[in-house]
Image (cartoon, rainbow, N blue to C red; front, side, top):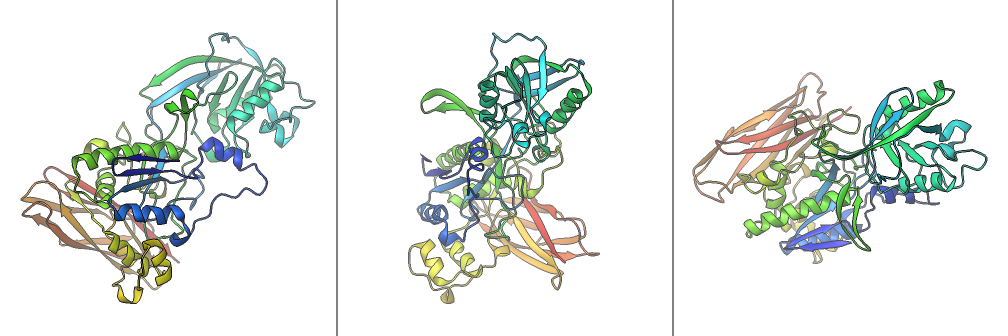
Length: 491
């Protein structure tokens, strides 16, 4: 599915929703799509043709998180979009017979289901892993009639299918509990029976109650939509993570946006609610379209830069954005941060790139002339091209590798003034622990709009290195232009 906007493509072709991925991973022989060389990646090739024509392309990062290096759509001419939550919870509270309660989520909240205590059973109580996952047909010989059933998330079985299995076996409700890897990330689904999706810690406590009680019971309290929830935004567990395998020297994903429990119009029914990076991607495309309409002369790279350098790295309460374990999200989960549409329309400075810059980068990456020609759709001779190393591609983020025989690195960047004439920016660098960083020159003065200035950032290991994340900010009276810094250490 590819959606067209004004000079913007939101591409999530062949990208599955998180629920669809769970279901497909159960199919015999199913393997998640590998990271491909760009000349073999049809989306990357098509996107290159689009950006040559001035069309901005955003694509889904993928739904295979939180495992590292599971990204899709890694080409630097594509905006690679991760998924994060909104400050909204469609809440169903689980009330246990011992008085403990746990908040979860579900769209299906029937008025006909009374908030009474019902018998509660863990699907894995019979020791069968398939039953614990509530696989279809796994309840033979296991009585769940008239009971609320606790099911484990995952195992290649879609969440809605678990509820359908419980219902067909005579169960009247389902508690869907995360496994450890999904942590606190919950999703609001249109379940086929009364249900609540709870986090891993809550699931563990519910199991402990079931094991300790001779007559465990539970009830559902349907509370509808709750706004202003915290922490938000937060990276969800399914959002694919970097580092990129296709180009490790380019930090990916680029950005994150709302991609969890997104309510929208849907083919075949009035509305649907879906989670996935294919839900966050159209948000970013819409923002890009707004920027393009306000700045029609901007290139796709300039729009990407505006989105990335104005992104927020803190949540609505001012604390660092967290991941599914409620720990600070790293750059390989969050990229430059969570999109800020208001700031993105007025970034002050942009890092610009042309199609020829990407060709020089591909030649510098070691692609043969024939491979680059496939991407460019014209004959390219890399021996006649002044190649650009990954680290020096004029990207809005910075990635360098240190360690081994390399204790020093220097990167080059250029910024264009798209703010006011007569602007002055001062460099502020937050170097990762164990790394010395210096910006030269430390001050950039722009006399006119669209003037470009070049600068260099020098990195040096100090005391063996250690930290992997930092930032560079160019700060003026009116703007703060932020780029994430990723340091990879070789031992």
